[in-house]
Length: 313
Image 1 (cartoon, rainbow, N blue to C red):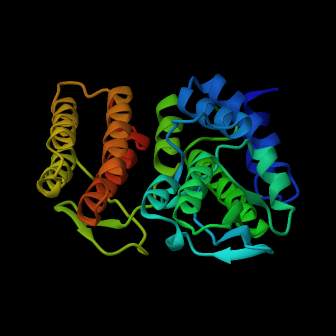
Image 2 (cartoon, rainbow, N blue to C red):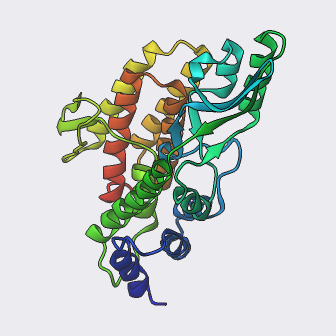
């Protein structure tokens, strides 16, 4: 397969809703190999093979918790498929279950689940919550087979988001690279960094810095310089004052300083900047908070755009 046919094939087939998503992801594996982009290969491989426990999941692989369903016994009476809210679980059970349902399955398994009308799931934390609940119930009362009941359309939505991330990445790459050529490794890495699991809510209106405009806004970056990038880092540092955990705050400030040092070096390295931006995103995701998330999103957007425009060596 030639370089032109690979990039052209992805661009041609990615908008065809009948084109298997797994096939497009396998083309991404090959594109990642030919461009040297480990980040693209890793993303495509994880989507195809599934994510390991403990992996950081892209945001589109987390679902809000649906209602619970259970079978119950009270004396001689039995009832099936009773519906409950997660809020009805004991406090320790709610804590164990958490606020989100994580999807580690391979894409092809998600496709099978999406065909079901009401797929149900249980897991270790939910079984533990069931045990705690039964301890609180009176004699001859019991809750059994506690499970989450989803709509298959929710899984179809996840698959749609994966396809959209792929479309966005390929659109970025083909906008700056002739189909007869391979995109640069740093451009591919930047496209993955920009689109996987991050939704931006900051706009950069001019070269004096970012202005937050809310969660539904589109990020735009125009003519950023190194000085502008430093100002973006300053906004993140200012937002870090709200971080309560001192150890995490120290890690965040160290990451900001590492990025600042790289940007101010004689020859900033694209590879180093992409890696440090990824670390900054990961730390911010652990911390949360609207102010910090907004500042980090704007900084990531600005630095990623600079990387894709070839601003660094």
